Amino acid sequence: MSTREEARGTADTFEEFVNATAGRLLRTAVFLVYDRHLAEDLLQVAYERVARRWRRLADGDPEAYARRVLVNLAIDEGKRRSRRRDLPAGSVADLERIAGREPHHAPSGDGELEEALRALPARQRAVVVLRYWCDLGEREIADTLGISQGTVKSHTARAMSALRAHVREGRTHG
Amino acid sequence: MDDELGAALRDHFRRAADDIRPDAALLHRLRETASPARERTTSPRRVLSLVRRDPHPAETRASGASGRRAASDARGGASGHGVRRRAWWAAAGVAAAVALIALAFVLRPGVEEKTRPANQVIPPTSVPTGSAPSPTPMSPSKKPSSSPTPSTHLPTPGNRTGTSTSPTEPPGREPSTRPSTPQPGGPQPTGGPPSSASQPPHRPTPSRATP
Image 1 (cartoon, each protein chain N blue to C red):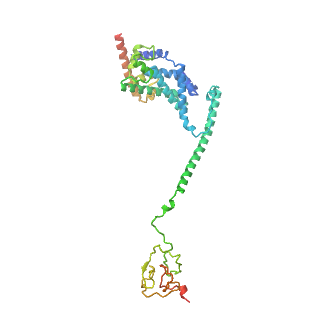
Image 2 (cartoon, one colour; image 1 turned 30 degrees about the vertical axis):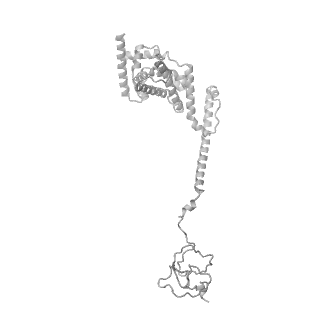
Image 3 (cartoon, one colour; image 1 turned 90 degrees about the vertical axis):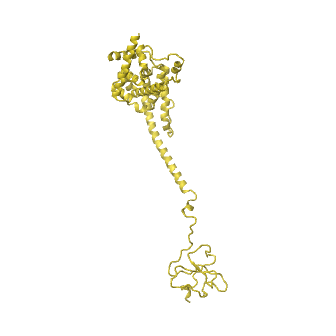
């Protein structure tokens, strides 16, 4: 992406880096967890970690590092929630969910696809988001997630199969 | 089918992304959250640094790109001085610690007493091992009475206090049982101060026996 290259090249200070990348990373975070408030919290943690290593990251690709932190945080959060099998009360979104309201999340998408993406495991959803939203290749996805390219392929295949089945089921029911 | 699904996913993400925008409050929070993180990482370095920080970094930052570069140059120069200053402080601290430890070892009480066992007694005079011990008369005030000497005490009639036979005496010579003759400087048979226990009674002094 040319905009990312530009942002990386002109981000002399951390504040400029935040201004240039907050929108993209916030969208990525929302697509990873489908929860706006949780996405903001994860994004804040990711920027904090980038800020700690800013002197070393400034010459490299701080956005890639932030995206990697974000994806790992989202996967950990998904694992934690699936392990506890309950809705943790830690954020406004959780309170809304406990109160029975739908939390504020990424709106105006395709309902079937959104529901199918929500139903995916966190790692498969991360692979899909990195591939179809961030336009990353298999190697970059493998580097981001810290897994092999074969694992990326298998996760992608399973995710696409689940999405296809979910959409097909939705069409037949609709 | 995968191409259709991929295109649908891209379209879904693109349409959903239009509604996701960070507001000013979030941006401000992200920037402000990052600042304490950087402060925390640099705080250990400031412990020994005496360099004054810029009290208004925001004004320097807001002055444009040239000001930014100047500020970064200034920070680099200050950090160089700070490194040297911290090195001096660290060296001084290490030297002071070494001096304190050395002083504690040197001035520790009871070091001299512990170097020698308490039950070990050093004889005040060396044991005569030569052929002719010098029978220098010792005054009673100089006589070490309480210190044990490596000598065999043989009671003689002339000397009730006992005379000592030096272990270095020739083995062929028997200890004399005769009454001791008065010797110059020796014990007086009719009173007088007793001679020293370490003085051989029967051995004439070569220097004083000759007239």
